[in-house]
Length: 388
Image (cartoon, rainbow, N blue to C red; front, top):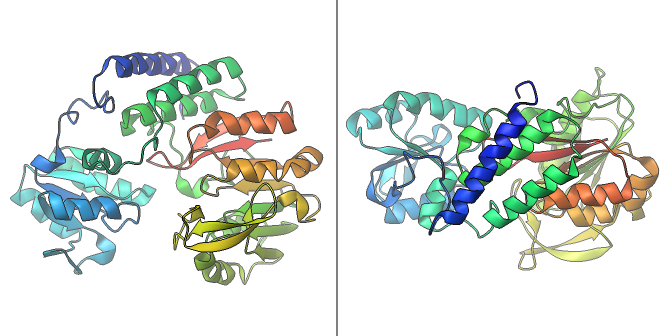
Protein backbone atom coordinates (compact mmCIF):
# COMPACT_ATOMS: atom_id res chain seq x y z
CA UNK A 1 0.00 0.00 0.00
CA UNK A 2 2.98 2.27 0.09
CA UNK A 3 4.79 3.81 3.03
CA UNK A 4 4.67 7.05 4.94
CA UNK A 5 1.90 9.49 5.75
CA UNK A 6 2.78 12.00 3.01
CA UNK A 7 0.37 10.29 0.62
CA UNK A 8 -2.65 11.02 2.83
CA UNK A 9 -2.54 14.85 2.46
CA UNK A 10 -1.92 14.46 -1.28
CA UNK A 11 -4.94 12.17 -1.63
CA UNK A 12 -7.09 14.53 0.43
CA UNK A 13 -6.05 17.39 -1.85
CA UNK A 14 -6.82 15.33 -4.97
CA UNK A 15 -10.25 14.44 -3.64
CA UNK A 16 -11.09 18.06 -2.73
CA UNK A 17 -9.90 19.23 -6.14
CA UNK A 18 -12.09 16.73 -7.98
CA UNK A 19 -15.08 17.38 -5.76
CA UNK A 20 -14.76 21.08 -6.64
CA UNK A 21 -14.53 20.10 -10.30
CA UNK A 22 -17.63 17.93 -9.97
CA UNK A 23 -19.60 20.94 -8.72
CA UNK A 24 -18.45 23.01 -11.70
CA UNK A 25 -18.93 20.32 -14.35
CA UNK A 26 -22.27 20.50 -16.19
CA UNK A 27 -24.04 17.29 -17.06
CA UNK A 28 -22.18 14.09 -16.33
CA UNK A 29 -19.58 14.80 -13.65
CA UNK A 30 -17.93 11.37 -13.90
CA UNK A 31 -14.66 10.68 -15.68
CA UNK A 32 -12.97 13.70 -14.14
CA UNK A 33 -9.47 12.40 -14.73
CA UNK A 34 -9.47 9.93 -17.62
CA UNK A 35 -9.08 12.56 -20.34
CA UNK A 36 -8.57 10.02 -23.13
CA UNK A 37 -12.01 8.51 -22.46
CA UNK A 38 -14.16 11.38 -21.26
CA UNK A 39 -15.68 12.01 -24.67
CA UNK A 40 -15.55 8.43 -25.94
CA UNK A 41 -19.01 7.16 -26.89
CA UNK A 42 -19.14 3.33 -27.05
CA UNK A 43 -22.10 3.63 -29.40
CA UNK A 44 -19.88 5.25 -32.05
CA UNK A 45 -16.83 2.94 -32.13
CA UNK A 46 -16.21 -0.78 -32.76
CA UNK A 47 -16.17 -2.65 -29.44
CA UNK A 48 -14.58 -5.85 -28.14
CA UNK A 49 -16.14 -7.23 -24.97
CA UNK A 50 -13.56 -8.93 -22.72
CA UNK A 51 -14.54 -11.50 -20.11
CA UNK A 52 -18.14 -11.21 -21.23
CA UNK A 53 -19.30 -14.23 -19.22
CA UNK A 54 -19.28 -12.20 -15.99
CA UNK A 55 -22.69 -12.34 -14.30
CA UNK A 56 -22.51 -8.63 -13.43
CA UNK A 57 -21.86 -7.73 -17.06
CA UNK A 58 -24.86 -9.48 -18.63
CA UNK A 59 -27.12 -6.38 -18.86
CA UNK A 60 -24.30 -4.51 -20.59
CA UNK A 61 -23.52 -7.45 -22.91
CA UNK A 62 -27.17 -7.68 -23.98
CA UNK A 63 -27.36 -3.92 -24.55
CA UNK A 64 -24.11 -3.85 -26.51
CA UNK A 65 -25.13 -6.72 -28.80
CA UNK A 66 -28.50 -5.10 -29.44
CA UNK A 67 -27.47 -1.45 -29.88
CA UNK A 68 -23.73 -1.05 -30.41
CA UNK A 69 -21.19 -2.20 -32.98
CA UNK A 70 -19.65 -5.23 -31.26
CA UNK A 71 -16.93 -6.76 -33.44
CA UNK A 72 -15.97 -9.48 -30.98
CA UNK A 73 -16.87 -11.13 -27.67
CA UNK A 74 -14.05 -12.81 -25.73
CA UNK A 75 -14.48 -15.24 -22.85
CA UNK A 76 -12.08 -18.15 -22.51
CA UNK A 77 -14.48 -20.23 -20.41
CA UNK A 78 -17.13 -20.10 -23.15
CA UNK A 79 -14.98 -19.91 -26.29
CA UNK A 80 -16.65 -21.56 -29.27
CA UNK A 81 -20.22 -21.06 -28.06
CA UNK A 82 -22.66 -19.03 -30.17
CA UNK A 83 -23.69 -15.56 -28.99
CA UNK A 84 -25.86 -13.19 -31.01
CA UNK A 85 -24.80 -13.41 -34.65
CA UNK A 86 -21.31 -14.66 -33.85
CA UNK A 87 -19.20 -17.01 -31.76
CA UNK A 88 -17.46 -16.31 -28.46
CA UNK A 89 -13.70 -16.15 -28.93
CA UNK A 90 -10.68 -17.06 -26.83
CA UNK A 91 -7.35 -15.29 -26.45
CA UNK A 92 -6.12 -16.10 -29.96
CA UNK A 93 -9.32 -14.67 -31.40
CA UNK A 94 -8.76 -11.47 -29.45
CA UNK A 95 -5.29 -11.03 -30.93
CA UNK A 96 -6.72 -11.51 -34.44
CA UNK A 97 -9.49 -8.98 -33.76
CA UNK A 98 -7.03 -6.31 -32.65
CA UNK A 99 -4.91 -6.86 -35.75
CA UNK A 100 -7.94 -6.69 -38.06
CA UNK A 101 -9.54 -3.61 -36.49
CA UNK A 102 -6.94 -1.34 -34.85
CA UNK A 103 -9.65 1.25 -34.12
CA UNK A 104 -11.45 -1.10 -31.73
CA UNK A 105 -12.07 -0.13 -28.12
CA UNK A 106 -12.13 -2.74 -25.39
CA UNK A 107 -14.68 -3.12 -22.59
CA UNK A 108 -13.49 -4.97 -19.47
CA UNK A 109 -16.61 -6.92 -18.50
CA UNK A 110 -14.98 -9.09 -15.83
CA UNK A 111 -13.92 -8.03 -12.34
CA UNK A 112 -11.89 -10.83 -10.74
CA UNK A 113 -8.20 -10.21 -10.00
CA UNK A 114 -6.99 -12.93 -12.34
CA UNK A 115 -9.28 -12.10 -15.27
CA UNK A 116 -8.61 -8.36 -15.12
CA UNK A 117 -4.82 -8.87 -15.01
CA UNK A 118 -5.04 -11.39 -17.86
CA UNK A 119 -6.99 -9.15 -20.24
CA UNK A 120 -5.01 -6.04 -19.32
CA UNK A 121 -1.81 -7.84 -20.35
CA UNK A 122 -3.35 -8.95 -23.66
CA UNK A 123 -4.86 -5.56 -24.45
CA UNK A 124 -2.06 -3.21 -23.43
CA UNK A 125 0.13 -3.68 -26.55
CA UNK A 126 -2.73 -2.39 -28.73
CA UNK A 127 -2.49 1.09 -27.21
CA UNK A 128 -6.25 1.48 -27.62
CA UNK A 129 -8.62 2.68 -24.85
CA UNK A 130 -9.92 0.00 -22.48
CA UNK A 131 -13.17 0.98 -20.77
CA UNK A 132 -14.21 -0.41 -17.43
CA UNK A 133 -17.56 -2.16 -17.16
CA UNK A 134 -19.00 0.84 -15.33
CA UNK A 135 -17.77 3.36 -17.88
CA UNK A 136 -19.61 1.40 -20.56
CA UNK A 137 -22.70 0.90 -18.36
CA UNK A 138 -22.77 4.65 -17.71
CA UNK A 139 -22.92 5.32 -21.46
CA UNK A 140 -25.72 2.77 -21.82
CA UNK A 141 -27.74 4.26 -18.97
CA UNK A 142 -27.50 0.98 -17.05
CA UNK A 143 -25.86 2.17 -13.82
CA UNK A 144 -28.34 2.16 -10.92
CA UNK A 145 -28.75 5.61 -9.33
CA UNK A 146 -26.41 6.03 -6.41
CA UNK A 147 -24.35 2.93 -7.20
CA UNK A 148 -21.07 4.78 -6.64
CA UNK A 149 -22.46 7.64 -4.56
CA UNK A 150 -23.12 11.26 -5.46
CA UNK A 151 -20.54 14.04 -5.14
CA UNK A 152 -22.49 15.32 -2.16
CA UNK A 153 -22.35 11.96 -0.40
CA UNK A 154 -18.64 11.59 -1.12
CA UNK A 155 -17.94 15.13 0.12
CA UNK A 156 -19.83 14.42 3.34
CA UNK A 157 -17.86 11.20 3.89
CA UNK A 158 -14.57 13.04 3.29
CA UNK A 159 -15.52 15.56 5.98
CA UNK A 160 -16.55 12.75 8.34
CA UNK A 161 -13.28 10.86 7.89
CA UNK A 162 -11.15 13.98 8.44
CA UNK A 163 -13.03 14.83 11.66
CA UNK A 164 -13.45 11.26 12.96
CA UNK A 165 -9.78 10.26 12.93
CA UNK A 166 -10.82 6.75 13.90
CA UNK A 167 -8.72 4.75 11.45
CA UNK A 168 -5.82 3.08 13.19
CA UNK A 169 -3.20 3.39 10.44
CA UNK A 170 -2.23 5.39 7.37
CA UNK A 171 -2.98 2.39 5.17
CA UNK A 172 -6.66 2.72 6.15
CA UNK A 173 -6.71 6.44 5.44
CA UNK A 174 -5.08 5.91 2.05
CA UNK A 175 -7.55 3.16 1.29
CA UNK A 176 -10.56 5.30 2.22
CA UNK A 177 -9.46 8.31 0.18
CA UNK A 178 -8.48 6.17 -2.82
CA UNK A 179 -11.82 4.37 -2.83
CA UNK A 180 -13.65 7.70 -2.66
CA UNK A 181 -11.57 9.03 -5.57
CA UNK A 182 -12.42 5.94 -7.60
CA UNK A 183 -16.13 6.24 -6.80
CA UNK A 184 -16.03 9.88 -7.87
CA UNK A 185 -14.02 9.52 -11.07
CA UNK A 186 -14.42 5.84 -12.03
CA UNK A 187 -10.72 5.89 -12.85
CA UNK A 188 -9.10 2.62 -11.76
CA UNK A 189 -5.70 4.27 -11.29
CA UNK A 190 -6.81 5.29 -7.79
CA UNK A 191 -7.49 1.73 -6.67
CA UNK A 192 -4.38 0.02 -7.93
CA UNK A 193 -1.97 1.35 -5.24
CA UNK A 194 -4.24 0.19 -2.39
CA UNK A 195 -5.91 -2.91 -3.81
CA UNK A 196 -5.18 -6.20 -2.04
CA UNK A 197 -5.83 -9.66 -3.54
CA UNK A 198 -9.39 -10.92 -3.32
CA UNK A 199 -8.18 -14.24 -1.92
CA UNK A 200 -6.83 -12.42 1.16
CA UNK A 201 -10.15 -10.82 2.05
CA UNK A 202 -11.43 -11.15 5.65
CA UNK A 203 -8.82 -13.49 7.10
CA UNK A 204 -5.42 -13.11 5.39
CA UNK A 205 -4.64 -9.42 5.84
CA UNK A 206 -2.48 -7.32 8.16
CA UNK A 207 -5.67 -5.68 9.45
CA UNK A 208 -6.88 -8.51 11.68
CA UNK A 209 -5.26 -11.69 13.00
CA UNK A 210 -7.07 -15.04 13.11
CA UNK A 211 -6.34 -17.12 16.20
CA UNK A 212 -6.31 -20.88 16.73
CA UNK A 213 -9.42 -21.20 18.92
CA UNK A 214 -11.93 -18.94 17.18
CA UNK A 215 -15.73 -19.19 17.01
CA UNK A 216 -16.69 -17.67 13.66
CA UNK A 217 -20.06 -16.32 12.58
CA UNK A 218 -19.85 -16.25 8.77
CA UNK A 219 -22.70 -14.06 7.57
CA UNK A 220 -23.04 -14.63 3.82
CA UNK A 221 -21.29 -18.01 3.58
CA UNK A 222 -22.22 -18.34 -0.13
CA UNK A 223 -20.78 -21.66 -1.40
CA UNK A 224 -18.40 -22.23 1.51
CA UNK A 225 -15.39 -20.40 0.13
CA UNK A 226 -14.99 -18.19 3.20
CA UNK A 227 -15.64 -21.10 5.59
CA UNK A 228 -12.83 -23.07 3.95
CA UNK A 229 -10.56 -20.01 3.96
CA UNK A 230 -11.16 -19.42 7.67
CA UNK A 231 -10.48 -23.06 8.51
CA UNK A 232 -7.22 -22.89 6.58
CA UNK A 233 -6.22 -19.61 8.19
CA UNK A 234 -6.89 -20.87 11.71
CA UNK A 235 -4.04 -23.37 11.35
CA UNK A 236 -3.72 -27.08 11.87
CA UNK A 237 -3.44 -29.96 9.43
CA UNK A 238 -6.95 -31.44 9.78
CA UNK A 239 -9.11 -28.54 8.67
CA UNK A 240 -8.16 -25.88 11.18
CA UNK A 241 -7.98 -25.48 14.94
CA UNK A 242 -11.09 -23.31 15.19
CA UNK A 243 -13.53 -24.08 17.98
CA UNK A 244 -16.59 -23.74 15.74
CA UNK A 245 -17.84 -22.11 12.55
CA UNK A 246 -21.46 -20.99 12.17
CA UNK A 247 -22.17 -20.52 8.45
CA UNK A 248 -25.24 -18.38 7.66
CA UNK A 249 -26.59 -18.43 4.11
CA UNK A 250 -30.05 -17.10 3.22
CA UNK A 251 -30.05 -17.92 -0.52
CA UNK A 252 -31.55 -21.41 -0.96
CA UNK A 253 -29.80 -21.81 -4.33
CA UNK A 254 -26.39 -21.66 -2.63
CA UNK A 255 -27.06 -24.22 0.10
CA UNK A 256 -26.23 -27.42 -1.86
CA UNK A 257 -22.77 -26.11 -2.77
CA UNK A 258 -22.23 -24.84 0.77
CA UNK A 259 -23.06 -28.24 2.25
CA UNK A 260 -20.79 -29.97 -0.23
CA UNK A 261 -17.89 -27.61 0.48
CA UNK A 262 -17.98 -27.93 4.27
CA UNK A 263 -18.81 -31.64 4.46
CA UNK A 264 -15.19 -32.57 5.17
CA UNK A 265 -14.51 -29.71 7.60
CA UNK A 266 -14.85 -30.29 11.33
CA UNK A 267 -17.02 -28.26 13.69
CA UNK A 268 -19.17 -26.41 11.14
CA UNK A 269 -22.89 -25.71 11.54
CA UNK A 270 -24.90 -24.44 8.56
CA UNK A 271 -27.74 -22.03 9.36
CA UNK A 272 -30.05 -21.67 6.31
CA UNK A 273 -31.30 -18.26 7.44
CA UNK A 274 -30.38 -14.62 7.10
CA UNK A 275 -28.99 -12.42 9.86
CA UNK A 276 -31.20 -9.44 10.71
CA UNK A 277 -32.24 -7.15 13.57
CA UNK A 278 -35.12 -9.43 14.69
CA UNK A 279 -36.97 -12.62 13.78
CA UNK A 280 -39.02 -12.30 10.60
CA UNK A 281 -39.69 -13.75 7.16
CA UNK A 282 -38.55 -11.50 4.32
CA UNK A 283 -38.59 -11.55 0.53
CA UNK A 284 -35.31 -12.44 -1.11
CA UNK A 285 -34.00 -12.16 -4.67
CA UNK A 286 -32.02 -15.31 -5.31
CA UNK A 287 -28.77 -14.47 -7.06
CA UNK A 288 -27.92 -18.09 -7.94
CA UNK A 289 -24.44 -17.09 -6.84
CA UNK A 290 -22.91 -14.39 -4.63
CA UNK A 291 -25.42 -11.64 -5.48
CA UNK A 292 -28.60 -12.79 -3.70
CA UNK A 293 -30.11 -10.16 -1.42
CA UNK A 294 -33.12 -9.24 0.69
CA UNK A 295 -35.56 -7.47 -1.61
CA UNK A 296 -39.25 -6.54 -1.18
CA UNK A 297 -39.84 -7.70 -4.74
CA UNK A 298 -37.86 -10.91 -4.32
CA UNK A 299 -38.81 -14.30 -5.73
CA UNK A 300 -38.51 -16.37 -2.51
CA UNK A 301 -39.26 -15.91 1.19
CA UNK A 302 -36.50 -16.60 3.72
CA UNK A 303 -36.40 -16.66 7.52
CA UNK A 304 -34.17 -14.11 9.26
CA UNK A 305 -33.01 -13.95 12.87
CA UNK A 306 -31.05 -11.72 15.23
CA UNK A 307 -27.71 -13.26 16.13
CA UNK A 308 -28.30 -12.35 19.78
CA UNK A 309 -31.37 -14.61 19.89
CA UNK A 310 -29.67 -17.77 18.62
CA UNK A 311 -27.82 -18.78 21.80
CA UNK A 312 -24.50 -19.47 20.14
CA UNK A 313 -22.49 -18.59 23.24
CA UNK A 314 -19.18 -16.71 23.10
CA UNK A 315 -18.39 -15.63 19.54
CA UNK A 316 -14.86 -14.44 18.77
CA UNK A 317 -15.11 -13.41 15.10
CA UNK A 318 -18.00 -12.05 13.01
CA UNK A 319 -17.73 -11.67 9.25
CA UNK A 320 -20.66 -10.00 7.44
CA UNK A 321 -20.93 -9.62 3.67
CA UNK A 322 -24.68 -9.83 3.15
CA UNK A 323 -25.49 -7.52 0.25
CA UNK A 324 -26.50 -4.41 2.16
CA UNK A 325 -28.10 -6.02 5.25
CA UNK A 326 -25.01 -5.41 7.40
CA UNK A 327 -26.50 -2.61 9.54
CA UNK A 328 -29.63 -4.55 10.59
CA UNK A 329 -27.50 -7.63 11.25
CA UNK A 330 -25.18 -5.60 13.48
CA UNK A 331 -28.19 -4.24 15.40
CA UNK A 332 -29.27 -7.84 15.96
CA UNK A 333 -25.80 -8.71 17.27
CA UNK A 334 -25.44 -5.82 19.74
CA UNK A 335 -25.37 -7.94 22.92
CA UNK A 336 -22.87 -10.32 21.37
CA UNK A 337 -20.61 -7.45 20.31
CA UNK A 338 -20.86 -5.70 23.68
CA UNK A 339 -20.32 -8.77 25.86
CA UNK A 340 -17.93 -10.95 23.84
CA UNK A 341 -16.06 -8.23 21.90
CA UNK A 342 -15.52 -10.36 18.78
CA UNK A 343 -13.24 -9.32 15.95
CA UNK A 344 -15.30 -7.94 13.07
CA UNK A 345 -14.83 -8.02 9.30
CA UNK A 346 -17.75 -6.09 7.81
CA UNK A 347 -18.42 -5.23 4.14
CA UNK A 348 -19.07 -1.49 3.79
CA UNK A 349 -19.30 -1.21 -0.01
CA UNK A 350 -22.94 -2.11 -0.72
CA UNK A 351 -24.25 1.33 0.33
CA UNK A 352 -21.89 4.30 0.32
CA UNK A 353 -23.43 5.56 3.56
CA UNK A 354 -22.16 2.43 5.31
CA UNK A 355 -18.57 3.74 5.22
CA UNK A 356 -19.57 6.03 8.11
CA UNK A 357 -22.76 4.44 9.45
CA UNK A 358 -21.20 1.06 10.27
CA UNK A 359 -18.22 2.34 12.32
CA UNK A 360 -20.53 4.81 14.07
CA UNK A 361 -22.83 1.98 15.11
CA UNK A 362 -19.98 -0.25 16.24
CA UNK A 363 -18.49 2.59 18.29
CA UNK A 364 -21.77 3.00 20.19
CA UNK A 365 -21.69 -0.71 21.03
CA UNK A 366 -18.00 -0.99 21.78
CA UNK A 367 -16.28 2.38 22.30
CA UNK A 368 -12.56 2.62 21.68
CA UNK A 369 -12.34 -0.13 19.08
CA UNK A 370 -9.54 -0.21 16.51
CA UNK A 371 -10.69 0.34 12.91
CA UNK A 372 -8.84 -0.57 9.73
CA UNK A 373 -10.03 -0.43 6.13
CA UNK A 374 -8.84 -2.56 3.22
CA UNK A 375 -9.99 -2.92 -0.41
CA UNK A 376 -9.90 -6.23 -2.30
CA UNK A 377 -11.22 -5.65 -5.82
CA UNK A 378 -10.39 -3.84 -9.08
CA UNK A 379 -13.89 -2.28 -8.91
CA UNK A 380 -15.94 -0.63 -6.13
CA UNK A 381 -16.82 -3.96 -4.55
CA UNK A 382 -15.10 -5.62 -1.59
CA UNK A 383 -14.12 -2.77 0.71
CA UNK A 384 -14.00 -4.28 4.20
CA UNK A 385 -13.90 -2.65 7.66
CA UNK A 386 -11.81 -4.65 10.13
CA UNK A 387 -12.50 -3.95 13.81
CA UNK A 388 -10.79 -5.19 16.93
